[in-house]
Each structure stands twice: as structure tokens, then as C-alpha cells.
Image (cartoon, rainbow, N blue to C red; front, side, top):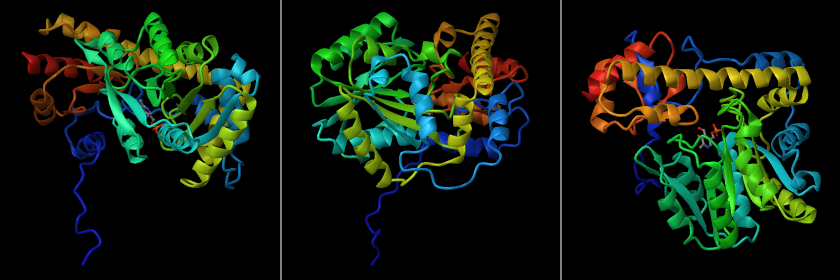
Length: 397
Ligand code: PLP
């Protein structure tokens, strides 16, 4: 008798299936607006010029294991990049380890909250959110609850706050630092201040998921505003889960960092040991190659300057494509109001189509997107945007 007699059949993550179907399609008009990876204006993946420079600089790097906490110089550079001007950084109140990209950072954050005697039992995530939030924290035994997030093409601030105000002090809340995935609707600064105030009053623990710092507006400082407001202006403890997948185009290398900002240097030292044990007990040591690349970028002035230009290149192209799509739909007099496309932050736009319309676009017009009708705008370029706007127009009529 098999050990797997009772094994359930689980659905795989739909977004990887979209890419699989796209790859199998031979139609020349096909466009992949599913997976959130940046594409340049020719539709190809883009190796950032700063990454090319960094790869040359590290051509002789060896292939040894990194330390359990990862590459020390990278951790220092990343802490400096995001938190450099904060009191927490200057006073040594930050504990960090390199992680398997943003996903690994979330995993280590959850494990650390579990094993640090924090008494946190519940994790609040937004509805909707990036699907692994639920998977990661539920698999660690947390109770996962949702905060309503989206209504009428915008952030549903009131509904969000109503639920947040009920959260117990045994909860943590996952906050998208910028470029909320999938909606592209971020709180305004004033709304962030109100959210932070409830979090402080109720003693909720904030976990920032920061997968798009610098990629969103082109400026890390601008995109890290909310993080610094919580940590520095309010002096709150927080978890930070950082990914360099999007901002450096290092998707497959899995470069990330998890950090906890604590109240004292002693606490940071204790949390660091828990983070190290969590890493050792899961992936042992994080991957080296991408870490060496990211380290060369952040630690070499000329390469860091090129990276800043690359962030502007990517974020401006995405903004430009959103504007073109919007202008095209207005020109075609497509029924409905599409202004949310240009208002949304980040690499996605939520179109608000029905599932039948999404399926029709794929079957009839070879346009691939998530079934929620979230499109990855980076998949649009000057060669396919006219076609996309036309078939979208036709579909919603
Ligand atoms: N969090 C959010 C909201 C994301 O959108 C992503 C990437 O799509 C991640 C985290 C981290 O992804 P990765 O593990 O590839 O860094």
C-alpha cells in the first residue's frame, strides 16, 4: 500500500501555466502579459547594463559556499541602501541575513517570528495579494486572515482600516512597501501615516514585503518612503523582505535579504542568531553568484550609478507603455473608464475583465494574462501595443 494513498491533487500556480501555454503558441502576434518579469522594448528579457558590468568585475569569483548569513558585504550594502540614514542602522539595531530572493525572505521572516517567542499567531495579508503570501505563512502554521484592499479600481482604505483596527497584538501584517501586487494601488502618504498609527496603537507587527524598491518609480529613496516612515519617524520594530529579482533583473539568481529592525542592539544580535538557525534549517546557505553580482553593483560607485540609470530606464518604459495603452483605448473610444491603468503603480495593470473575456483574448487573439485580468505591462512594446489595444477594444464591446 502506497504512502500517498490519500495525497490530494493540488492546483499549480496559474501564472506559471500561462507562460507554459504562451511558449507553446506559435502565432506571431502572441503576447505574454502574464508573469511579472521585465521585458525590454523588443519583447526580450533585458540584462541590465549594470549587471553586465558587475559580471565582468566578478569574472574571477570562486564558487565556494557563502556563510549561513550570506555575503557580509552585500548585507552591509543593502542595509545601507535601504536604511542607511535611519537611527536603527546607525545604532546597530538591524539583524539581517541574505535570502533566497523575496520569497525566501518571507519564509525566514515567518520562521523567525515563530521561533523568537514573539507570540505572533496571526498574519494579515491583503485581499487580493501575491498568492505565495498565503501559502508561505499558512505552511508555517500561522492563521492567515485577509484585509479587504480593492474596490472600484482603487485602494479600499476604509474597509482596510475597519479590519486592521480589529487586529490583536498577537498579529503581524504584511505591507507591500510600494507597487502593490496585483492591484498597483498604493496608500497615499497620509493613508500610510494612518495605517502606521493603528499598527502602533494596536501593537501589530509590520512586515514589509519590498520586491519593487527602485523598480517602481526609478528611485529607491522614493519607493522606501513608507519603510523609513515606520522605522525612523515612528521608531517601530519591523521585518523587511527584500528582493533584487525585479530591480536588478536577477530573477533566477535568487538574491534577497530579510532584515528585522529591533529596539536594541542586543535584541538585534539575538534575532540574528535565530535568523541564522532558520536559514541553516531550511536552505543552509544562500546562493552565491547573484549575491556577488548585486554586491559588485551596490559596492562599486560607477556600477551603482549605472544601476540607478537602469532603474529609470525600466520604470519609465513601463510608465510610458501604460500611457500609450490608455491613449490608444481613449482614441478607439473603448467603452469604460481606463484611467486606472495610468494611475496604477508598478509593473502591473488590473484591467477588470471577466474570466470569459480573458479566456477569449487568449483563445482568439493569443494574448496571455493572469485569469484575474492583471497584465504585466512590461510585456507590451511599440510592436504589439496597437494590436493589443485593438483586440481589447473588440473584446469589451
Ligand atoms: N512579493 C511580491 C508582492 C512579489 O510580487 C514578488 C515577486 O513577484 C515577491 C515578493 C518576490 O519574488 P522573488 O522570490 O522572485 O524575489
